[in-house]
Amino acid sequence: MSPPTPHARLAILAAIAIVAAAILFGAFPPIAQDPAYHNFADRRTIWGIANFWNVVTNLPFLAVAIRGLRAFRSPAAFKESWERAAYGILLLGLGLVAFGSGYYHSNPDSARLVWDRLPMTVVFTSLLASTIGERTTMSAGKWLLGPLIGAGIGSVAWWAATGDLRAYGLVQFYTVAAMPLMLAWFPPRYTGTRGLWAMAGCYVLAKILESSDGWIATVVSTGGHPWKHVAAAAAMWCYVRTVAGRSGISRR
Image (tube, rainbow, N blue to C red):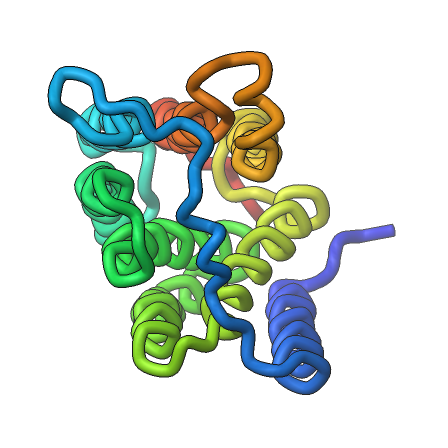
């Protein structure tokens, strides 16, 4: 069976967003931030840094963002100028994750968590727009870049203003659902799809480590959350390495 047409791909992505939003906002009441979320397993102060391992393991995000700058030297990494802009925004968001997450983890509470989540949504949504452009139509990715980033930032602002996490949850869920679908079913414009699957695998590992923080602390004193940072940074390293080394695939 031949793959769906570009317009059909866009329709599928739109349908996923509509169904997810309908379920989340129709079937669930407002979702508040669980105060227990801030109770990480490892709270040690080392070298005068509170929650040391949860803070310093954010440095790999900054390192990956700096490493990602190499892709701008590759003439084959981007077909259109908006893709370069989207990639630059992603790197900026990734670098800010290091500072925002480090700030949050130095004294975890919901007010500081805003500065952790804001740059993460920039990374998610710029990555999503870039992948939509690659796997559907370039014009779709270009015109969705701004609205998607705005929606991501708006979801965090909405949570900060109302205490309702549903919009932020939709941004995360949609990215997690749409990315594997596009990789598996929609034809690429660039080489390097294996690297993108590696990125997805590292992200799944990061979520497992995050949810197993307390259990892992019974085996390793740091708990699972610092390793979640490492796995998430590894996911983005897979992406920036793929972008730097990819080249266009000709399409008829």
